[in-house]
Image (cartoon, rainbow, N blue to C red; front, side):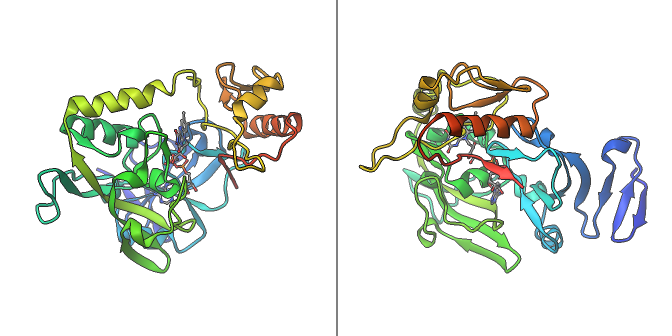
Length: 315
Ligand SMILES: Cc1cc2nc3c(=O)[nH]c(=O)nc-3n(C[C@H](O)[C@H](O)[C@H](O)COP(=O)(O)OP(=O)(O)OC[C@H]3O[C@@H](n4cnc5c(N)ncnc54)[C@H](O)[C@@H]3O)c2cc1C
């Protein structure tokens, strides 16, 4: 049994399961609050400490949004400062990490279906595996993106084989102004952009899918996955820079530019420009955000064109 000692609005969990390093408290609405290094939650594996709130229902969300906050998904597009963050960091759990893939009979036909709610905190790779087993199509082009569903929707993540908005029926968005349910038509979404304002939280979504077969979905996943050959296997937040656009609208391959500048294998501390693909910075183990920033600076310096960062720097 948990022994809950009240400390102001929070209760300390003195259960043996919690170490002193990351002592948990429970907020007045029941959210779990822990001071934790964000390196634990980012695919790059860097990032200092912040107060991490794991929220599982609307009351808990309303409470956490009462002070400055950031919303964390799969941490696959982030470089978090070594000094950590002063804002609360929200992680979605509970009902925001639940999956209901039952077809809604009122909205589904023989060929197409609309699911129940799928939480924004659901990891995308596991969700895609479930959809493949059911033979449900439309989202398999996002295979290999290590996001949560909410983060993938917020960025409209995708590949040339498909994007998050290709499989959406509706979504729930929560902000300090309240909760609203919208359809994609009501959002100004575009390439890699949902049009949803920052810090408006995608708590859950209903998926619009096409009935196919497990084999056919797997085949399309394999095709999308093959396109990833040559990407590094080390910890990384994905591509560093967007492909720069030329005056005629064509785009240059950023990786090729860095490769031609001889940057592959360049190292600062334990961060390195990947040998496999020069637009990826990888953590060789124990890298810091400062190492990554130094490499980003080197990449900008060595390539004579304006470059726009692909990932987000926190803060
Ligand atoms: C190996 C690798 C390969 C990748 N390949 C691709 C690719 O092919 N295509 C592609 O588009 N991207 C790719 N990415 C980048 C990344 O996976 C995507 O940008 C993804 O959408 C980030 O989602 P996340 O849940 O990890 O969000 P995070 O990195 O945690 O956060 C990114 C942003 O989304 C916001 N956010 C997160 N969750 C929510 C939510 N529930 N509601 C509202 N806002 C939220 C955060 O506040 C932050 O602003 C890749 C990354 C890696 C590491």
